[in-house]
Length: 544
Image (cartoon, rainbow, N blue to C red):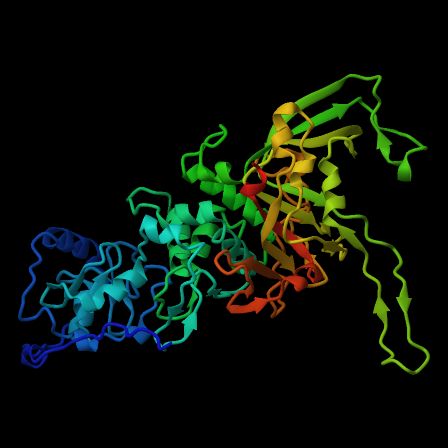
């Protein structure tokens, strides 16, 4: 099937009849083109006329191959961020369009005449100042700010759609690569994951463009819209603006020059978006809480931990003679503890000469269902000299599982390589709920895996801050952030340490997304990787 043709930029004879433009020099260094440009543009926006004679002029000079709207919207001369126009001939950003502005001088000195306002999406011919209203520019406007209708969004999970870039190369909207700017693979993996959680994705795609919205929410929405856009000029997207805003908003806690921890970033991002959406501590106060927030019951026994020698493995047992404190807390994720890494591993060496002579180290394995027993309400966990038991009393529509692989120890965070085995369909999270009559209809609830973020590599450099401070998310201990904070810049590996495996809802197929690399994946390989973050979707048919 041949890709659909894009609109062709049309020109007419008026281009050759335009007056010859002389050269002009930009204002002196002490001048303020920023203020002048803003004032003139504000005054002329309502007065801009559309000249039929010039409306199609210069459109044949538009060069879509040079256009890239993923970078931060700053004037390439003054570095100002207000009233920015993009030159549709060379792709550079300039401020203003009135006289004494950088865009005005660029149009004269370089004979580039077609510009678009990156906020209003209105196109103009400079230096004449005429507004251009031509349908051939619609694809450029959609590339700057993709727009979606509720009907289109409702079909994303049921209809397969193919996109085509400028070269006619097909790609799958929603499954496009993200540029690795430096050490931002942890950001890319988290963004790819959230972009495929339907309630979060739909909210971002349909978010109204209003002035005054928090910058992080706007940057995240624009990034996700571009990822799902079916007419990208290039089959990949750069998260530069989003990453820059993350660094500023987090006070450089998450940066581009430092490889961070994906789960720590995920919890920070969810709570920050929750606040930006006007969320409070109340249940369902934002789409973040509606999607991911559940409730867990924590039972604390006694003041000192006691152990029952007769129990299996010498596990600590609660002292029933002492009073217990029961409290209910919200959670956004369930942290799963792996068995301790074995001190010694058995290896089989082929000494018969029949094999290839390679050593094979046995890697420990554990089932996901075994890790979930931490939340069955009867398993006691020792913490600060007390025994606690955890059990969810309400499960959200989407469950985030954090498999804690890293432990602090010296300059490097040691990684637990234990393989976690799990099915991708029908995991009975409902079995963790109490046997109350009100919960009986939910105990058969099953969940399907939709996202699996893996960590590649043997270890992660520990961050300078290893104080073990509590998370700023306000979550209870079982959903606290991992012990390993943001990674150090010492990680200079050329390979991206975080990889996202994501299921396509429309086709049921899995894809591996590793920064710019996107390729199909077999479901069987999911368990072979070191799973770190998983997102499970409730199978609503199992509730009834």
